[in-house]
Image (cartoon, rainbow, N blue to C red):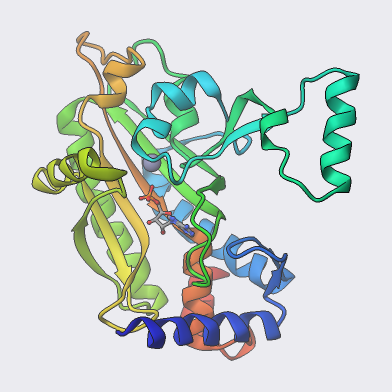
Length: 306
Ligand code: AMP
Ligand code: ZN
């Protein structure tokens, strides 16, 4: 699709969501308030995913949408995705620096150089907080965690499917390579079933993360060659521009080694995560069935609110 046509499609869908009150613009692309009905759909998507996860007996946990900077740096987020990252800055100066800050604010001048980096960063993906809590042997059979939270990625866009603050629902499996691979194929089937029942016409594709720069292109090639990331793509803006609404990622022993997580036999654990872009699913559902959930097919309503 030509850039102009795609931009018009973004504006059209975002306009309808805003007019219906489902997205409440905050003045910056990709940051929205949401209507009660939007939140009801969002909760329904998460609950449907949780029901699919239930046979694995996941450990439910909750983390704030902030990562300690040590973890943020350990997972190499700024190294690999500097353009998406959200390290957090605050003021630590004295009265003199504060006076200068106020002067700049009064004059509408930039003040970033008066701020200093804090010990936290916005969480860019749901699974990162989990690994740092696991620096010991996982039980025989491994472990599954379930977590959902707001994530931040600095990618302002008029596309209502691409937010800066968005929610992700995730299950994370940490276990032996065989167990993790089995679990990954189970989730490929579960997501296919979920999108099928929601009538969202998803297809899968091998994908890569948006690593920065020339070095990043090599990393992305490696990720594709080993088929480590598989996305469920929904044609919200047409078949030629489908949007990833869920993904299944296999990390090999990357996090096991990084956080010294061992399986019962003492080897570095392998890990994978199954992630639903729950805000994306909500927008895709509104686009597919219209702004009034009362008129949605009963089969879809039954998946969200059984
Ligand atoms: P990823 O870690 O990139 O595989 O992201 C997991 C899921 O989060 C993706 O499959 C998307 O559905 C969703 N997601 C990623 N980036 C965004 C974004 N900017 N806005 C909304 N949802 C997103
Ligand atoms: Zn993940």
